[in-house]
Image (cartoon, rainbow, N blue to C red; front, side, top):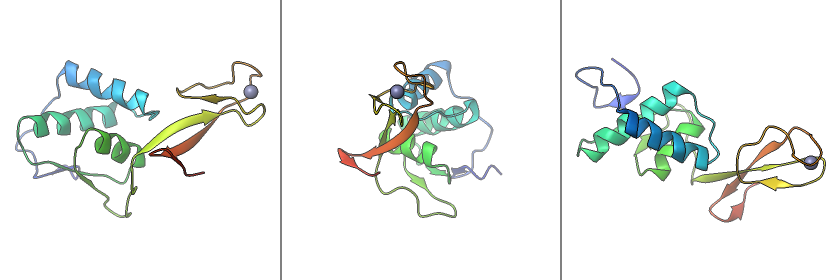
Length: 126
Ligand SMILES: [Zn+2]
């Protein structure tokens, strides 16, 4: 049985394109760079939850936990206590200090590789 979803799914379901798009957009907004499998997993949980099913995402991936929290999908860490609150990511250039709200690889001013910084609910966590 897939360790991801509880209760176990009777059959393997595929999330719709719409919910995949929705979740992808949300995760990008939050600054989470999740893979296709992660996005599909969250989309599926989101769909099941919307249709009234009781779902709990079992995952130790902080990115998934973060997006799930934002979408109000209950989750549980398998081995780790998990994040305490949603984290909004920002990116900051270590060279010139410019901050970005969206994922950028390189600073548009000086070309330095930009680092990710977590911002929890208006409170700085770094
Ligand atoms: Zn810079």
